[in-house]
Image 1 (cartoon, rainbow, N blue to C red):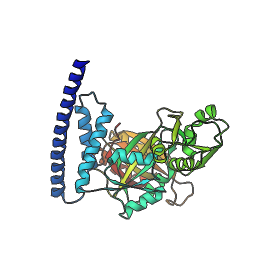
Image 2 (image 1 turned 180 degrees about the vertical axis):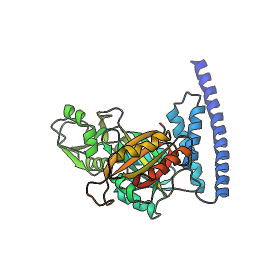
Image 3 (image 1 turned 30 degrees about the vertical axis):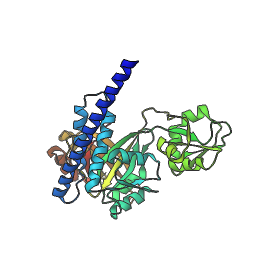
Image 4 (image 1 turned 135 degrees about the horizontal axis):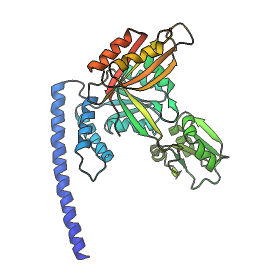
Length: 360
């Protein structure tokens, strides 16, 4: 026992010494970041540069810390350094405690000022009006499909996509009560109820399900009613001090939501990028085939193709536009050539932005 205590003492001394070195290096890094801000005199947040730094750190990681932990640590370091020179204001689809808030923090770190807005439209307006530097909204879910309101806004807004976030969605059943006994209603967003349908049917088939505006609102309502429960994420459980009675109740364990980061600009090339655009097809035979031909001709890979009603574009109520994601940055010659060829065979094309592909 004495030898173990002696070894523990030496290990703790070693940790203390390393902590002092880490702090010294962090201070040096912050000074360099401040100097970068002084030289650039403006927007020093560069999505492509942060993506490159995080990829490089992940590749250098020797362990034993997992890649996700290393990315989180360095994201917070960069977030704090940036805040010294340029504190960011981030608008997100709220309220507080939603998965969108978690996605915003995952992308920007915890240093910015985060402001929730109750509708996706309000997030767009806040960034367009300069109330926020960036906005974060959901655009699609791997189980339930696209978020139509985000797509409709992208069609008409001047904002561009400068980043994306993939967030694994873990749904939890939470309540003030100690057990499910005596609960009379279940609150959640309609999409979350759908994502947990099978679990709910097996475990609480007779509990009335009440759709509400968001999971965070469901948690708030459950916190105010001892006979109610909610489905929401861990952030909402912490915010409203609810007990999680059942964790990870989503039917699909790989359930993931993709979020986009909105700004008045997109991102420069990072080396692993994606480009999004929306276009319409001419009303003639083979029009959709014509949309895909330039991509094949120039060797550009497509990762998403989705049609949606034009909503104000065109003269017919049955006209559609196509939202398309392709691999590569629009500044790359082959991507630019494909987009140029597309413009000659479509009725309308709007580039939504190029940005670093989401990592783990």
